[in-house]
Image 1 (cartoon, rainbow, N blue to C red):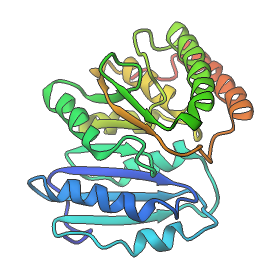
Image 2 (image 1 turned 120 degrees about the vertical axis):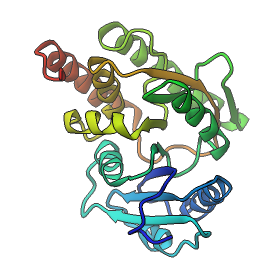
Image 3 (image 1 turned 30 degrees about the vertical axis):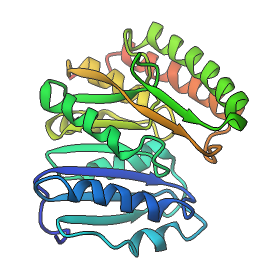
Length: 254
């Protein structure tokens, strides 16, 4: 399938930054998943100013029949939120999801997101704290993952209190959308970095979109290279307060 032919099924957006170690394997897994589904599908890769061979390897990926791939490259590092928005804006499938380049949420999790979208949801998000979710990790990461989990729960608690009551995991890197929902969401999103997930969910609530949290299997195989806990936690808190202020001013309303 060429990029000029609109896909009838699913678009998968993959933001990446210095992902040369895993991008070829991840794209192959996503392509195999899509090829097994009826219809035609696409992958949209958005590189966020990588300094390694990520773009070269993504463009060299061999895809099966019925799966197209477009690789976009930001001239400089703009942030994950910017890259996800850029990919979502060009995606053309009936359903659109984004996932991290390391596939910390393996492709089998896509089914749960799509089932929620087919059932009733306009937006379906992975929830690592869902009672049916599972973590898979090595013992050597126990201390690190405990620290990240503790900080994450504190951040999410504040987020629920101020902005999205009832949403238990705002930051998981797997979310799906009906195409009609994206058309309403994208023009209202402004944040470029990690807090973009929170703003996205706030806007979804303000627009009255149906939101579903789904259980996932989360594989913690590598230390993340794009998140520094101290610096980025402070930045996320600042963004949180910015979103709160904008919502109170009515900046996200239809």
